Amino acid sequence: MGNDSQSSSGAVANRVSKLAEANLRARRLLADLGSELREARIGRGLRLTDVARAAGASPSHISRVERGLTRDLGLLHFMRHGAVVGLRLHARFYPAGGGLRDAAQLDLLRRLRARIGDRWSWQLEAPLNIAGDLRAFDALLSNLNATIAVEAITRLRDAQAQLRAAALKQRDGNVPRLVLLIKATDHNRSALASAADVLATAFPLGTRATLNALSQGVDPGDNGIVLL
Image (cartoon, rainbow, N blue to C red; front, side, top):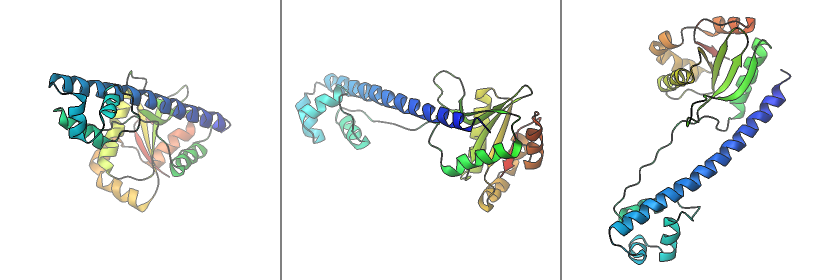
């Protein structure tokens, strides 16, 4: 486990890079939204003062929004501004990976690494390498025998949805094996039992068989779930 510090520093650098990217995307989004608001206003023959009066803001503020020069606008403002010029804002989040991991999740990954020994090279927050896709595996294990993605889950909320999302990530990332590393709690065991139909086909290997193969540095032969 001599590469722990190197892996940790790489993960931190990766998070910093993604935060910088998020800032850039936010500035571009503000500029795009502002441009759409301006075009809608002009298309309706409205002046800045007309929109400002209806939205409860100053004309200078409306102008700055249209030019993408504001940085701390909330959704409520965009919704009100859009409504005045006949637009409706729709927004949602998409899985991107690389988010902040809590201590329990990092501890889970460390415990797996200690359990299976040093037969694998580890890469934390491994991207899927698909253009425009920001998702990443929590860890990617590789050696001359196999490449295995690992998703660490400390608490199962909607077990079937989480398992299907992991399987889709495996498919899109073109990784032959996927191990779900799940914290061994009564809640998680109960959640897994409720998703038995999904597990039977997507993750047929259990903890013992999966850990045995990983400890030997060989391909487990199928996807598996490890409770630790």
